[in-house]
Amino acid sequence: MKKLNPTIKFFIVLVISAFIGGLLGGSIIHGEDAIIQSLINFQNFMINNNLLIQSSVFGLCALIILILYISANLKLKHLDENDDLLFDQIDHQLGFLIPFISVTMIFGFCLFGVTVTNSMEDFKLLGLIIFLVNMAFTLIMTILSIKLTKVLYPDKKGNPLDFNFDKEWLKSCDEAEKFVIYKASYRCYQLMNFVYCGVVTLCLLISIAVNIGIFPYLLIGFLWITQTLVYSIAANRFQHGQLDNVQ
Image (cartoon, rainbow, N blue to C red):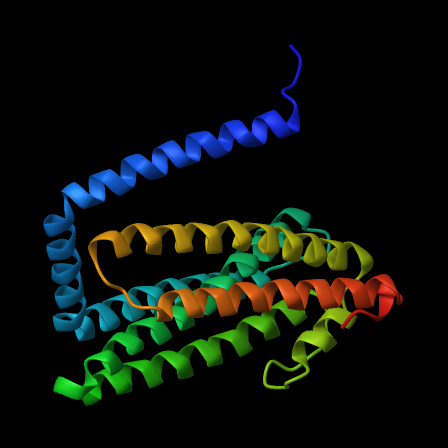
C-alpha cells in the first residue's frame, strides 16, 4: 500500500482538525451556561479547599518520596560489585525519584499560587507554611538523592546547591549518558510545541464561553517564543562549535 503524499496528508489532518474544532466550538456555544458554571464551581472548590488539597498532595508525595529514597538507600547498602540486577533496580528507582521530587516542588508552587490568588480576601498563614515546608523538603530530598546517585556512580560530580551544578553534572557524564540527555531534551522540545499549541487551542475554545482576557495568550506566547529562540540559538551555536564543549 502506497503512503499518502505528505502534502495531501497535511491537508487531510488540517480539514479533520478544523471539523473537530467546529464541533467543539458549536458544543461550547450551546453549553455556554453549563461550562461557565462548571468553571466557577471548580475555581471555588480549589480556593475553598486549597489548604486541604495542598496538605494532602504534599503529604502523599512526601510519603512516596521517603519510601523510594529509603528503599534505594537500603538496596545500595546491600549492593555487591557484580550484582548488575540490583544495580539496575537502584538506577531505575533513582531515575524515577529525582523527577518525582521536582514534580512535587512544582505542585507546591502551583497550589501556593492558588493561595496567593485568594490572599486579598482571606490569606491563610498555613498555606505559606505548607509551601515553605514543601520547598525545604524537596530541596533536602534532592540533595540526598543526588548523593545516592553519586555513590552509585562515583564519577559523577556536582553539588546540587551550586548554581553550576547542571554544567558540572553534564561534564561528568560519559558519551552515552550525554546522548540520552540530548535526545530526551529534543523529545521534550518537540512535545512542548504540541502542548503549547494545544493549550492555545483550549484557551480559544474556552474564550467562546468565558472572557479569559489576554494574559493567558501573552504568557503562553512568551513561553513558546522563549523556548523556540533558546533552542534555535543554542543549536546554531553548537553547530558552529564543538559539541564536546556543550554547557
